[in-house]
Length: 161
Image (cartoon, rainbow, N blue to C red; front, side, top):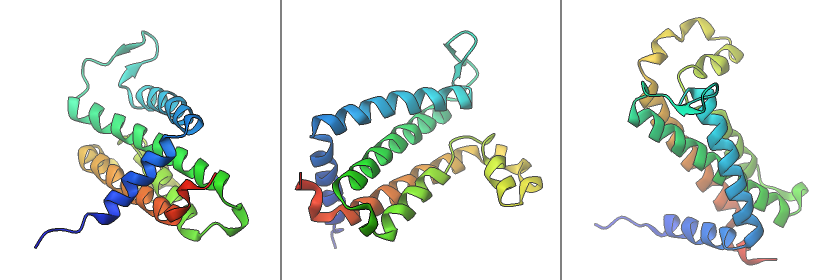
């Protein structure tokens, strides 16, 4: 039995429509540059003192962190579209929940203890360094899910000017 890909196709069509508008394409390009550089510096991919790439970094980690940064920029662009195109008083809870979920995910094992400290679980985070690749994959999935969630609230309204 073939899998129904219509929700994914709708999301891709919505993204194509949003990024087809020049100001949102420019916003995405600017956010991507800023967020990727910030993530690279905060996670040690790019060494700030020399502006060189860290030779000790694992390729999988750098790829996943870059994907997280690019998806975060895409999610922020879609959220900006959502806020700009619709009356903010009538935003559905899914838009805000999707944005919060995606922004709450993190890209590095060093950052994990920060949000766990916020939740009062800071002492139990030493094992997370060994699980960094799994956490990065979980972050990518969470951001994709939240992006899908935001795009669901956009629906047929992407063509409105």
